[in-house]
Image (cartoon, rainbow, N blue to C red; front, side, top):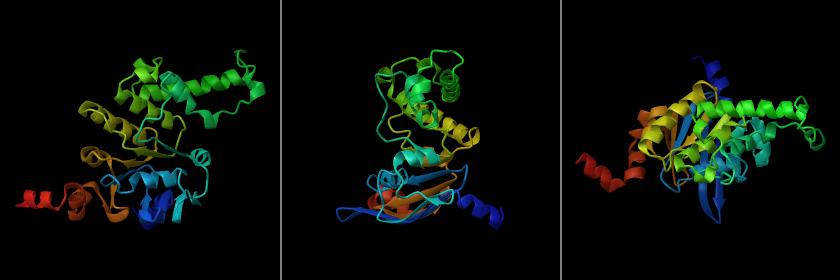
Length: 272
């Protein structure tokens, strides 16, 4: 890969010297990294390392104290969350944020809201089959059906989300984020609470999102098997500070990463 191509890729998304503190406690301390287009980039670290805080800064929930967050050449710091979504960035959350008394289809359709062009007056013609409102509704439902097929959610299509298994709900939240048609997808611990079989399926679906849809993925994940199986590059942080960045194998074997995850005594026991 030549120098020019590397520069084009790194221009897709990058964070420069990002820092944010809460009440004197520094949650993220001068973090920088680049994410190549159509890659899977994972952020790892123990609880409290600052991973979700980085996501909250990217999605506009927090305003950092310093640094830049550049998406396709534009610093997006200061934009409100819905404006960032319109730019092409979507996310999932650690805790499921679905409407439990709505069906899977209805929850996924909510993800189409930024693409809806029908206004109140034209929406009143919805019941006319060939009206602009009806045609737009059909288009959005077709897009949602594609997501249902991709994530194998056919059996859950018309079921209320609140009665579905936890792993299925996690997939529905992933599907709702995909319904925004993002170019950059932020996944915050997508495998949390899933069993081994569900995690293996999730790995395939994330790879399909990358390969079939061409979506760039920024991932926070505690399960190192998931990270090792799907990541192109990995960033390790602890206490808001940079530890190392590189390929999955390289990062996984880094002594500071082992120390952060296992503790110094465990490492001594393993190497004794």
